[in-house]
Amino acid sequence: DPGQGRPAARFNQLGFLPGSAKLAVVEGVDGGRFEVLRDDTGDVVLAAPLPPASQWAPAGRAAAVADLGELDAGRYRLRVDGVEALDRLVVDPDAYAPLADAALKGFYYNRAGTALAPAYAGRYARAAGHPDTEVEIHASAASPDRPAGSTISAPGGWYDAGDYNKYVVNSGITMHTLLAAWEDFPAFFRSRDIDIPESGDAVPDLLDEAWWNLRWMLEMQDLADGGVYHKLTNLRFDGAVMPEAARERRYVVQKGTAATLDFAAVMAQAARVYGDFEAQFPGMPARMREAAEHAWAWAQAHPDVPYRQPDDVVTGAYGDDGFDDEFAWAAAELFVLTGNGDYLRAFERHAREADVPSWASVGALGWGTLARHRDRLPDAAMRARVEATIDVLAARLAAQSRASAWRIAMQPEDFVWGSSAQALNQALMLVQGYRLSGDRGYLDAAQSQLDYVLGRNPLGMSFVTGYGVRTPMHIHHRPSQADGIDAPVPGLLSGGPNPRQQDREECAPAGGYPSTLPALSWLDHDCSYASNEIAINWNAPLVYVAAAIQALTPP
Ligand code: 9MR
Image (tube, rainbow, N blue to C red; front, top):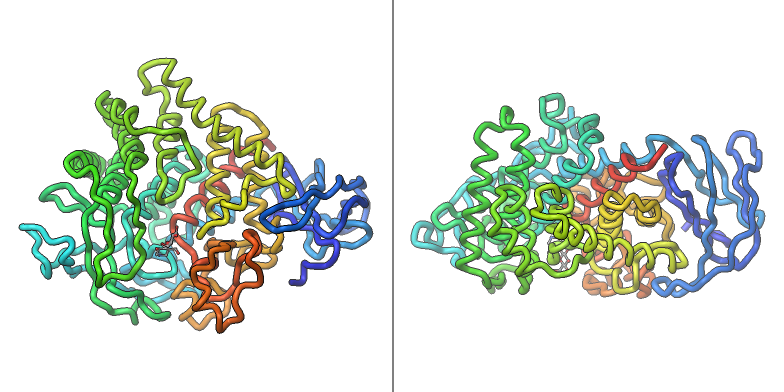
């Protein structure tokens, strides 16, 4: 690791906004001094003592925070005890807008069922794969109208991750996060152009890209009863080949309560959001509202149908046995869409305190929606309760951040499969707290989480392909592995350190992981689906947080 001199100073490799809190974290020293110099002139603009280092459990070693203070736009060098950091420190009023664009463009690169033209995909252009126009009803999904072996058409959508399957549950939180980014930062997204085939039409690119997956999701509902299939999948994972070379038979499998409620929530939110674009999507807002209500009705009749992976299917399970959070989220979306108090009462029955969201834990999405649309709530007491629920979570995360040697909220147990997204979903909740309270500490804590993902971490890596000084080169992502291009598809978030190392066996030939410590257990090798895969539900909070910090930070 070229950044691993002693002392090692880590900071956000994309830089800072002029108005950002600007922190670096230094390992390998205790005490001592640091200086910030202008890169061109070498003038020292700040010289200060380092605070004492403190221990950080996730990396099993100590670190100290250097507050770089106020810096104007420009390039700087950082010196600690006379040793200069390799990376330049950048202050740029546009620091995160290109990142938000790239993270959104990452979804385009993962479109299923379409060729990517050179005009939009450049050297990552590729042929279409997985048309999904003849998808078999798996025995687990058979119904009188649709017996096993009959086929449906469910084209489009995004590949979930490094694999080529399409999963409704994971599309749930992903779609919500992208549509919430639109709802919270419309001016930002209206001003962006990410160069996709729909760019330049009357719809912001964010909503054009989201539409690609919405259209697919609609086909995953069985109109005979309103239930939604859990996933559209091969029986086994494809090899590391380009999409057009992956031709295994495709199936839809078992309907379930989680998939159906996630679908209901997304369709209700989308009916609201796309209602402003009725002219571009004629009839669709009404169709999505109907789809949402139909799915809700199915879930009322089938409140406890967990997904059970059939014996002959071994692709991603996204299995979840507790549905209160899915009920609460769907109810919140349907209440805001329809104003029907029955949904609010259903929300009250199912809602628990808010926690950092993940694909399996979506309760906070419901709280976030009610907060965003609190003018629709019946009374001031309920508005106060919604705000307080989000504030409690934001306050806890901000306190964890303040108490941490790296000034981030991540605890050892947060280094799960997809830890990079855990960091960003913490940021997303801090941003929600900031939007409600204006507490600057929440915004700074959210910035810190983004800093972590972009290089202020003990690995010294920015976890976004192509964005940063040292970035993942060997992500577990079939197109990136098979396209013959050294650099991976850009704008994709690596899952990040994961001490469970579920891919230990597959990665043994590559030498295995360098460490079992939570924050160090990461491997930049395509064997590592448990630490170095990419996924739509991880890229979505990257879109949200990059846009949020760019849009919300005062100049
Ligand atoms: O992100 C998922 C993680 O929370 C689970 O622990 C893991 C194992 O079930 O699966 C992850 O999701 C993967 C999915 O099952 C299949 N596509 C790739 C996803 C990211 O690795």
